[in-house]
Length: 69
Image (cartoon, rainbow, N blue to C red; front, side, top):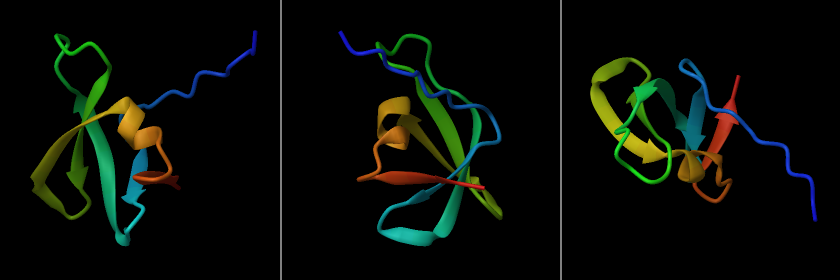
């Protein structure tokens, strides 16, 4: 059995979409507690009205998003 390290997502973490590295998305809050997998609300940096709700799995999948500093 492999020992997996669980990667955490915190409010304030920053991500870029793999196909659009010029747009930064910032984790602003937690999504629905009714969803089977953890979800997070992200806002586009500089455009607080641009809000998305994404699963933690999508944010951590390097095919879709990459964490940035």
